[in-house]
Image 1 (cartoon, each protein chain N blue to C red):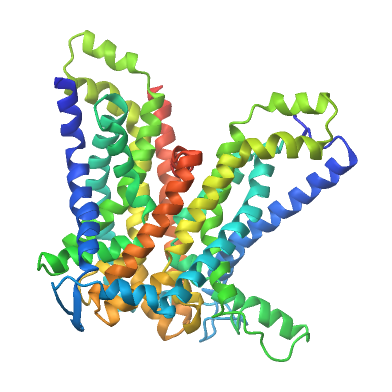
Image 2 (cartoon, chains in turn brown, purple; image 1 turned 120 degrees about the vertical axis):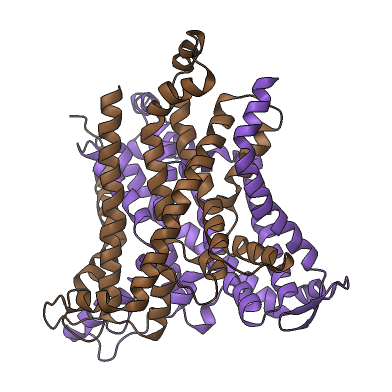
Length: 273
Length: 286
């Protein structure tokens, strides 16, 4: 086993120890608040904070009877599914164009595609609203979905591009020289090799859309709440234990899904290679 | 030739989408800054410099700008200090399950931002972990006000941005040839010297990319001050939201958005001139 090369002189040993301790503290910093929320979701008390007065599942029960939470949940799921489907297709196409072809203005297009990740969401939010106002159109679900597609697009392109660079062109060239047309080459060679990245991209887009709050506050149609905006609205009234239960459920969903997806992707890529 | 055309077909949906939803709105926004505000929700297309004049002369806006820059800078620097050390640890450690440490850095990206932010209420609030513990131990009588302060806002933003920083630095560290370190040690450097002379300079691109990303994201934030800050802790993003959604003053809201866009654009441009934006993309794609 490789020892850290640092740990050879006295200052190195102490330095390394300090690094270790700080690292542990940072990990605690990152996970303690989340853990506390999960624990408090089982609190029997009427209030959302400490102390724990007993263990109970009643707040989860309450949650499933809360009409507006259920509605917001459904809204978010639909928007996220739609966004994931459309955004992945558009993003994969763009990524292929940007890695496999040479054309003038490629550098500019590369920057444009990444831009939504670098412009603050507040500005993207205002921009789209202004567009609707200028075009005299109402805010609809379509706007929300299109907005989410824009927000997630850079991430699809980045993930797929990273994978495409790793796939050797000789496979595609071999297929082409053996008489397959471009579409068949893509379907039979590139797509299977790209599958892990596509699965990763779909999950990423789903979580980005499902989780988005800042831009959604601008874009949502009047009276519509998505899951995160619903939580924000509930927070403004009080820190109820129901929010803790809701938060815990969402953590289970959003952490469980990608882990599952990662496992699937590993099996897929394991079979192919 | 035909190849080039095919590439454009593939790109077309993405480009059209971004042209309509990103480029066009920002262009309209720029034009709107010269519109005249009549009353809530109504404006006239008389071209006027009134909005810009108001922005440049009213110190109210300058204070917001200054506060936002200060909070974003503190957040980015704190992230750099708190992020570099774990990244360095993950790179150097002989721990067998390194992947687990990296996975744990990705997990926060999957947990809802809203939930991660409000979870701090349970740590800092009057009924939060810190206050309740201190009270039970008899150290304090009345709870310390930690929530709804600027400190709480910064804490929430660090919590959200730290994984970006760690991943950026880690990617950069991974690119360092470890033989260079051995060479430095063989030539008589102490471990501290080797770090200062070799590792730190070579990991600067990642550190700077992380700083830029954290600064830009913190400066544009809107929800964190809403959840963890008091009325006085509003940042520039909140100002934009209130101007547009509450006062329905579209021309002024557009002006403020353009200001934020241009300022953050300048920061990014200066950065990309010296470092190249590719470093950030590398970090983002992880």
